[in-house]
Length: 442
Image 1 (tube, rainbow, N blue to C red):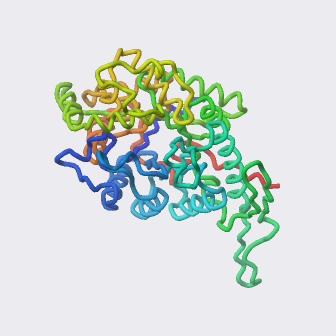
Image 2 (cartoon, rainbow, N blue to C red):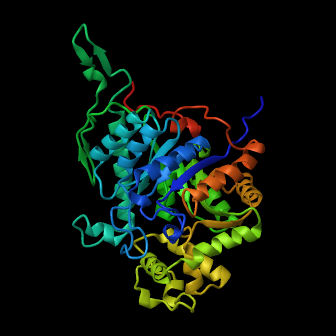
Image 3 (cartoon, rainbow, N blue to C red):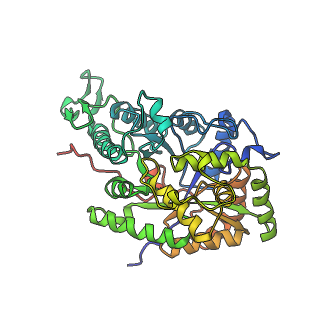
């Protein structure tokens, strides 16, 4: 029996005017793209026309930076996804929502609602919110500790799954003649009592079309990887080299197997920020245009935030300070800080060079080259055991996504690696994943 050929998965990671921190300053960019619904609809329709598996909206419950040097936020993602669901029909719709600053019942209801109104296209990127500024918006003096945030997320997801399962298939009978809407024997109370939550249930929304929204995870710390091995169906991850990505890929697949799950059921998607030109010189010129529009002060502030220190701790034309190179224990983004240190040491970078390298993708893989070179790199990672697909993170939007669709996708399709048309209607079908069994089914 011939095995089904492995297919590449592509997710369009959308971010206002683009992923590069200076994208909003380009002459051709819309500086108010963050709150322009038409902008988001056009991006979603572009990605859907290209048959991307999904699109993704990042989010955090706090202003990004001070707002001085870059657009500091965007529309609330589940609200935005609901609007995009009505302007599209097939592409998957994934949003980041924090497990730290939400409650299981309300969030399970909102996610189930998006899955219903989109016809089974919703996905949830589960984050534990690393920023202290986010905690301050919820009456806390500081964020909970790293391990505690993941312990809470673990229980949160257990409750959310039970809530989605609390309506069995066929619970809604809608028998007009008998005057009987639902079978109460197929509606289940949870009466959950845990370390963090007390939830009665059942949910007041029927089980989502996909059973659960697609469950996505993006943390690469030890706690994050263990959480992903237990729960994630797709993983968004950041790596600057093939070797680092391949090691992560092998590690997460092994952890998934050890957790008693099928590693093939976990789709690993590193990010790539492609600067595409018809020649290498043209691609380098495009990347240089972005870099020249950066405001170094912004990059310095962002770097300081990652390492939970002050900008004054750094000298622009010196290496990272020794206390950073010693890898202090951080409560925030541990995997991202390790990535930055590894990059700085490997390439002997000054702080000025580091913030330049982070300007386009915040630590994701940046590639500058022709369409053929971008495609060859994607194929090498995919076939070499470093990725099941990619988060496409265009440095400017919509131009960067349009360039990828017009010039790179035909090469991938020509090699039989990416679909010509959608074969299913739900996000789970795009990713080749089944509807989860209902835990309450007899």
